[in-house]
Image 1: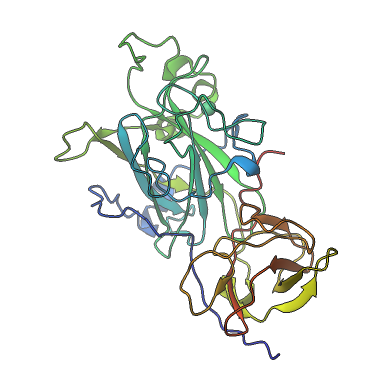
Image 2 (image 1 turned 180 degrees about the horizontal axis):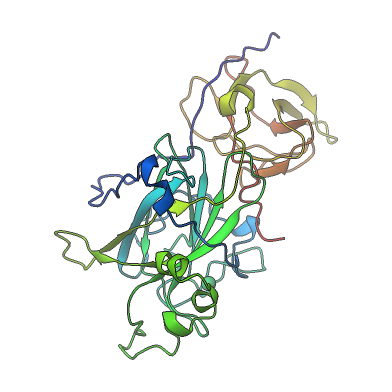
Length: 341
Ligand SMILES: [Fe+2]
């Protein structure tokens, strides 16, 4: 069967992206002529709680407050954080993967070393989200006010993977406040003695990490918002991705060792990059319903297996025959979401 290939770029799943929500604060554009005024984001520790790949929620969009279409939302003060990824000259960086993870209202992370997420963490809280910046370099998240846990003041963890990078660079942001625990008592660790913020020696950089939150106009539940631009202090080269990050490709019939029929989808990939298949192979005439796949010919078909290190090409295997003889596959985000080793 002849393979039909069309460029067709689908960014990170925006299925529920801020559905029904007006973003009150859009942030400000920093034009290039203000380049000298930009403060590069300091790199600080990733910390121990970046979720393991097996615990990253399937719903890893930029809304951490609501998982899938759950009727239950996360406990805590709903909080919006938005801004842009900018280079040192103030130009927006498109195609940057911004990741956010942090503790729930009571200070518990999603992170766990077992196959399931930390049972102490609010089950309605995603705990992790991501956003791929568009041409304006902009990202936005809906989450909650991060909870406090012993040894730290309130903070958010960020990972930024620029186009062409294979590893995230991490930083953290805090909340410019006197941190109070859930009983209203002054918390033992404040921004001034927090062991991450206080060790950023450059005072200007440190100030950019401590965000000023304000109440969302018109909120009746105390929702908060802040803007934060991540300014890149390193050089990077935007690579050329095959077919712009997705393709339409024929599946090749293969058999599992048990004799079951399966179809192999081969995605051209660049050696050394880690690929995430986030769009899922789909029947081309059935919209974007996800089609489960495996990354080995004999592997269990399970769409939660979503990362692979590519060495020349990336193979996916699906059980279902494509209705029209080809599948649509979206992929991108090298280096991302491979979890903590
Ligand atoms: Fe943390």
